[in-house]
Length: 181
Image 1 (cartoon, rainbow, N blue to C red):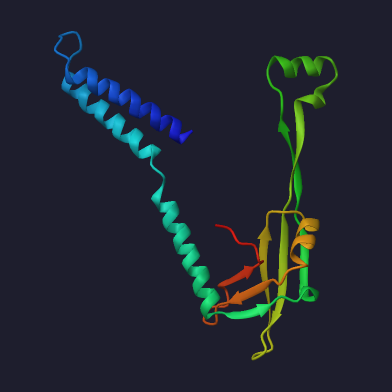
Image 2 (image 1 turned 120 degrees about the horizontal axis):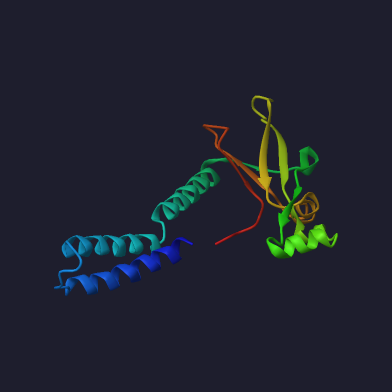
Protein backbone atom coordinates (compact mmCIF):
# COMPACT_ATOMS: atom_id res chain seq x y z
CA UNK A 1 0.00 0.00 0.00
CA UNK A 2 2.85 2.32 0.88
CA UNK A 3 4.59 1.79 -2.46
CA UNK A 4 1.37 2.25 -4.44
CA UNK A 5 0.71 5.56 -2.70
CA UNK A 6 4.33 6.56 -3.32
CA UNK A 7 4.10 5.82 -7.04
CA UNK A 8 0.81 7.72 -7.33
CA UNK A 9 2.31 10.75 -5.57
CA UNK A 10 5.42 10.65 -7.77
CA UNK A 11 3.47 10.37 -11.01
CA UNK A 12 0.90 12.98 -10.00
CA UNK A 13 3.60 15.34 -8.73
CA UNK A 14 5.65 14.91 -11.91
CA UNK A 15 2.63 15.65 -14.12
CA UNK A 16 1.78 18.73 -12.05
CA UNK A 17 5.42 19.93 -12.17
CA UNK A 18 5.42 19.60 -15.97
CA UNK A 19 2.13 21.49 -16.20
CA UNK A 20 2.89 24.33 -13.78
CA UNK A 21 6.47 24.87 -14.95
CA UNK A 22 5.09 26.03 -18.32
CA UNK A 23 1.80 27.53 -17.09
CA UNK A 24 1.26 31.12 -18.14
CA UNK A 25 -2.50 31.49 -17.77
CA UNK A 26 -4.51 33.59 -15.31
CA UNK A 27 -7.26 31.09 -14.32
CA UNK A 28 -5.26 29.40 -11.51
CA UNK A 29 -3.94 31.88 -8.95
CA UNK A 30 -0.39 31.53 -7.59
CA UNK A 31 1.00 28.93 -10.04
CA UNK A 32 4.41 29.02 -8.32
CA UNK A 33 2.75 27.76 -5.09
CA UNK A 34 1.20 24.86 -7.01
CA UNK A 35 4.58 24.14 -8.57
CA UNK A 36 6.21 23.93 -5.11
CA UNK A 37 3.38 21.72 -3.79
CA UNK A 38 3.69 19.36 -6.76
CA UNK A 39 7.47 19.14 -6.23
CA UNK A 40 6.81 18.31 -2.57
CA UNK A 41 4.30 15.61 -3.53
CA UNK A 42 6.75 14.05 -5.99
CA UNK A 43 9.51 14.05 -3.35
CA UNK A 44 7.18 12.56 -0.72
CA UNK A 45 6.22 9.82 -3.18
CA UNK A 46 9.90 9.13 -3.84
CA UNK A 47 10.56 8.81 -0.10
CA UNK A 48 7.61 6.42 0.30
CA UNK A 49 8.89 4.14 -2.47
CA UNK A 50 12.42 3.92 -1.04
CA UNK A 51 13.04 0.95 1.27
CA UNK A 52 13.25 1.82 4.93
CA UNK A 53 16.86 2.06 5.95
CA UNK A 54 16.03 2.00 9.68
CA UNK A 55 14.71 -1.55 9.28
CA UNK A 56 17.92 -2.68 7.59
CA UNK A 57 19.96 -0.98 10.31
CA UNK A 58 17.99 -2.70 13.07
CA UNK A 59 18.39 -6.06 11.28
CA UNK A 60 22.17 -5.55 11.10
CA UNK A 61 22.29 -4.50 14.75
CA UNK A 62 20.29 -7.59 15.74
CA UNK A 63 22.60 -9.84 13.66
CA UNK A 64 25.70 -8.26 15.22
CA UNK A 65 24.31 -8.80 18.72
CA UNK A 66 23.60 -12.48 17.97
CA UNK A 67 27.10 -12.96 16.55
CA UNK A 68 28.57 -11.29 19.65
CA UNK A 69 26.63 -13.62 21.96
CA UNK A 70 27.59 -16.61 19.83
CA UNK A 71 31.32 -15.70 19.95
CA UNK A 72 31.65 -14.59 23.58
CA UNK A 73 28.80 -16.49 25.17
CA UNK A 74 28.55 -19.73 27.04
CA UNK A 75 27.52 -22.47 24.61
CA UNK A 76 25.11 -25.02 26.08
CA UNK A 77 23.78 -28.03 24.20
CA UNK A 78 20.07 -28.20 25.01
CA UNK A 79 18.99 -31.36 26.78
CA UNK A 80 15.38 -32.03 25.77
CA UNK A 81 14.71 -33.80 29.08
CA UNK A 82 15.01 -30.39 30.75
CA UNK A 83 12.65 -28.69 28.26
CA UNK A 84 9.01 -27.77 28.41
CA UNK A 85 7.24 -27.32 25.12
CA UNK A 86 3.93 -25.53 25.64
CA UNK A 87 1.36 -25.23 22.87
CA UNK A 88 -0.04 -21.69 22.65
CA UNK A 89 -1.85 -22.19 19.33
CA UNK A 90 -5.20 -20.58 18.78
CA UNK A 91 -7.77 -20.14 16.05
CA UNK A 92 -10.06 -17.30 15.05
CA UNK A 93 -12.80 -16.71 12.54
CA UNK A 94 -11.96 -14.55 9.55
CA UNK A 95 -14.64 -12.96 7.40
CA UNK A 96 -14.83 -14.61 3.99
CA UNK A 97 -17.91 -12.96 2.49
CA UNK A 98 -19.49 -9.57 3.10
CA UNK A 99 -22.22 -7.42 1.63
CA UNK A 100 -24.99 -8.93 -0.46
CA UNK A 101 -23.49 -12.41 -0.62
CA UNK A 102 -23.23 -12.57 3.16
CA UNK A 103 -26.85 -11.45 3.49
CA UNK A 104 -27.99 -14.12 1.06
CA UNK A 105 -26.03 -16.75 2.98
CA UNK A 106 -27.71 -15.72 6.23
CA UNK A 107 -31.17 -15.76 4.68
CA UNK A 108 -30.59 -19.20 3.17
CA UNK A 109 -29.29 -20.63 6.47
CA UNK A 110 -25.67 -20.92 5.33
CA UNK A 111 -24.21 -18.21 7.56
CA UNK A 112 -21.11 -20.33 8.25
CA UNK A 113 -20.11 -19.77 4.60
CA UNK A 114 -19.41 -16.13 5.50
CA UNK A 115 -16.49 -16.98 7.80
CA UNK A 116 -13.61 -19.40 7.83
CA UNK A 117 -11.51 -20.63 10.72
CA UNK A 118 -7.85 -19.63 10.70
CA UNK A 119 -5.45 -21.61 12.90
CA UNK A 120 -2.33 -19.90 14.20
CA UNK A 121 0.40 -22.18 15.52
CA UNK A 122 2.52 -20.89 18.38
CA UNK A 123 4.73 -22.75 20.81
CA UNK A 124 6.68 -21.69 23.86
CA UNK A 125 10.00 -23.51 24.19
CA UNK A 126 11.36 -23.33 27.77
CA UNK A 127 14.72 -24.76 28.77
CA UNK A 128 15.83 -25.01 32.40
CA UNK A 129 19.58 -24.47 32.67
CA UNK A 130 21.62 -25.14 35.79
CA UNK A 131 24.75 -23.02 36.03
CA UNK A 132 27.61 -25.38 36.97
CA UNK A 133 29.55 -22.71 38.89
CA UNK A 134 26.74 -21.34 41.06
CA UNK A 135 24.37 -24.33 40.84
CA UNK A 136 21.46 -21.94 40.22
CA UNK A 137 18.63 -22.85 37.89
CA UNK A 138 17.35 -20.40 35.32
CA UNK A 139 14.70 -20.71 32.63
CA UNK A 140 15.32 -19.54 29.08
CA UNK A 141 12.44 -19.36 26.65
CA UNK A 142 11.83 -18.92 22.95
CA UNK A 143 8.49 -18.27 21.30
CA UNK A 144 8.16 -20.10 18.00
CA UNK A 145 5.61 -19.53 15.25
CA UNK A 146 4.68 -23.18 14.74
CA UNK A 147 2.55 -25.73 16.54
CA UNK A 148 3.83 -28.15 19.18
CA UNK A 149 3.97 -31.20 16.90
CA UNK A 150 6.00 -29.35 14.27
CA UNK A 151 8.44 -28.13 16.92
CA UNK A 152 8.82 -31.66 18.27
CA UNK A 153 9.40 -33.21 14.84
CA UNK A 154 11.70 -30.43 13.62
CA UNK A 155 13.96 -29.71 16.57
CA UNK A 156 14.16 -32.97 18.52
CA UNK A 157 16.26 -34.48 15.72
CA UNK A 158 18.71 -31.54 15.70
CA UNK A 159 21.34 -30.23 18.05
CA UNK A 160 19.81 -27.12 19.57
CA UNK A 161 22.31 -24.76 21.18
CA UNK A 162 21.73 -22.07 23.77
CA UNK A 163 24.22 -19.21 23.88
CA UNK A 164 24.23 -17.14 27.08
CA UNK A 165 26.08 -13.84 27.51
CA UNK A 166 28.43 -14.34 30.49
CA UNK A 167 28.14 -10.69 31.55
CA UNK A 168 24.34 -10.47 31.29
CA UNK A 169 22.41 -13.76 31.53
CA UNK A 170 19.26 -11.98 30.29
CA UNK A 171 20.92 -11.79 26.86
CA UNK A 172 20.70 -15.20 25.28
CA UNK A 173 20.10 -16.81 21.93
CA UNK A 174 18.72 -20.20 20.91
CA UNK A 175 20.30 -21.65 17.80
CA UNK A 176 17.78 -24.14 16.42
CA UNK A 177 20.00 -25.05 13.48
CA UNK A 178 17.81 -23.20 10.98
CA UNK A 179 19.66 -20.68 8.85
CA UNK A 180 17.89 -17.81 7.12
CA UNK A 181 19.50 -15.36 4.73
